Length: 311
Image (cartoon, rainbow, N blue to C red):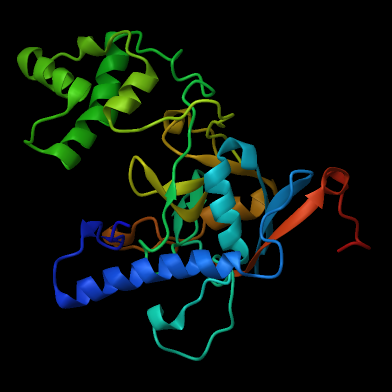
């Protein structure tokens, strides 16, 4: 269990209060697993059914079909959280007694990049629940994508590798291939050493890890992924793409796609944002998820259109 303050993205200090928060996060994570596993209702659909996460808002419903085969362990963990119950008032701010609820009940769409993507917020304490990323680089064709020109090499160096190296490693010794690239850059000030490098090699040099045998999905309009906090771990926060983002393939774990309500996602992404720099991608009045639940549907049921009589 890693204790991370997602608010300021710095490790907790060793003060008494921070230690207590860290312990509380760990206990909550264990409590979530035990509580969800003990519910009477099935929390994960069987293999003959299709899984849908339904997010109800005052703007309308967003339906997300989830594909367990793309990341089996990660999706199973997420679907158990959807139904819950996950509330532990001991670790939530004081207030009226709450009924048990699912992970997304009451959360906000607290992040928006207009016309590009939106994401749900994270239920506090932020680092209590982490989901290990499961991505197959081969399924995404990352071994076939190569840096083919000096201009492309400079673009990759400036926008992908150098910012990562500066923010993470600073002046420290760089590991493996990243260290070799940095040494060559400091000697020649030219990134031609990237010519011929595959996207998989670049991602692995930056710390991403891959598994084999998974039908991983690219980041495309309507795809739903989990918002990551490191190269290895994601949070349960859902991030919905409104445009193709091939630069994120292999860096974001996609677990499903929006089947209904993409126009609502578009509307949420274009709401007015807060004017402050520190919260430049936070909606001024975020949309709240009034209910988030799991629906298991047969293949035939999932393909039937919803009529007025059914609604």
